[in-house]
Image 1 (cartoon, rainbow, N blue to C red):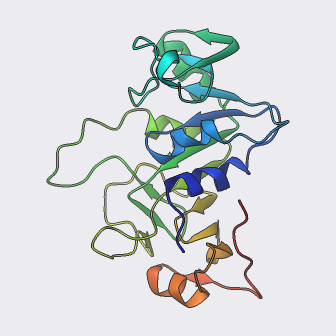
Image 2 (cartoon, one colour):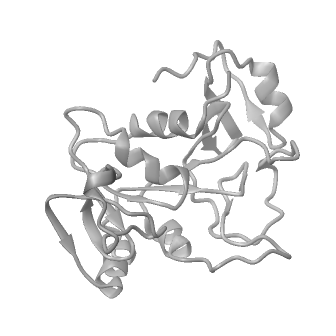
Length: 218
């Protein structure tokens, strides 16, 4: 069966490495904060000016003045710091972020990402996504494999306005884990119970399947 958004976040959390500085985008990526593996120490950065973000608060921990870039209430860890957006984007543009995890509306087989604008619909703005994709050392996308009407979101070429070009390294969807290479989307893992054939049907871009594909373990 396909992964839910928490399953996607749990799988992406396995990509974290001790000592990483990590930026979590709006949506599914924010859930990664709740699933950091034991023994792994990372510094979560929020572009509105927070370094050292913790998991989402319980009811008795909620502080309405403490929010992430998506305006969700968050917690801080010992040693965390607060600062203005200029310093925050200095960290981002200075390439001090080891890993950026973003949501996306579309990703192309060469690693282009579109995640900030839908023609004809009201969108608040691009936020810091363009700075993040231009500066991050590694970008992982968390997304649904297909749109609500069943169309693939993994495409030969993005149809929506681009956020960044040739920047996405890995994608974790509700159906699969894919690596972006010069050959296209390389299928690395599949969701439990999901077949390779189902993933092929749901992927409009070039999908490379090599050998037996293991199931995602969470």
